[in-house]
View 1 (cartoon, rainbow, N blue to C red):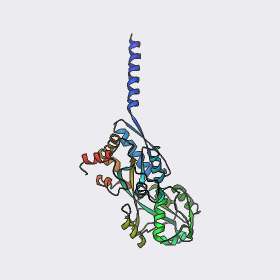
View 2: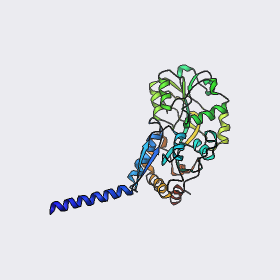
View 3: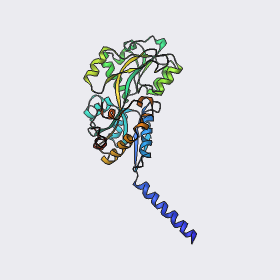
Amino acid sequence: MKRLIVVLLALAFGLVTHQALAQRQFLTIGTASVVGIYYPVGGATGQIINQADVGLRATVEATGGSAFNVRALAAGELDLALAQSDVVYQAYNGEAAFEGEAVSELRTVMGLHAEPLHLVCSRESGITNVRDIVGKRVNIGNPGSGIRFTVEQALRALEIDPDDFDAYNLTAPEGVDFLRDRRVDCFFFTVGIGGAALQDISTTQDVVFVPMDDPAFEALVEEFPYFAFTEVPAGTYRGQEGDITLFGVKALFVTTTDLDEEVVYKVTKAVLDNLEDFTRIHPALNLLTAEDFLSGLGAPLHPGAERAYQEAGLQ
């Protein structure tokens, strides 16, 4: 009889567990390469969602970056993703690489950290100004990446054509490795201040972080709401003796209108309720406030996120 009771209890427990799993909704978060900030930010967001125990289970995927993520969201291959604010803006409005294929269903969940465009060059290249890249070997990012989008806009503002230098179309990690192996002179990298890949290259190689304060960029910042100048304090990277001015975009956590309002509400509320833990994920997020979630957005807020912010008194 005792054995029968044990068996029945085990079956009952298994049935409850099975039902709980069946009721749990699984979400996939698209990030970028594992050496950037998107991957750990996406992973930590997933952890917060999972620990909130609200019937959601999030997993993280390393991807090709912002533009890839937006297209994957539109195709239903991702549920949530991180993307640069300029890419989100262009996708939502059907501009630049998204001309004729606007992702009108794109929605913002939250704004995150600033992502200035870094130009990192070997010291032996002699490059001290962004215009010095003419005639040099420079990685401008892989096609479809957020880095590539920002670099292309920067080059147009500078009136520099990729044919004016030896342009490489590598991923961000490949660009770093190519500089380390002296196969390129510079690489562009749109990433939060203090990104691990930049910390590593500045520690192991003699590099220069080139200021991105050319007057041509002032017009970009004035024209486009997703661009802004950012100051990088001296000593952020090894060998960086003074403050440098960079310009760039902002990281956004995005989805589409296909994701249920209640799901997005739970995701947003979970992060808001655990904001202190969230901001400890990476130095780039240390100064992030709840108010930052609502600034620099490239697409309208998702109704679920909007409801969470209204309840938190942020709207």
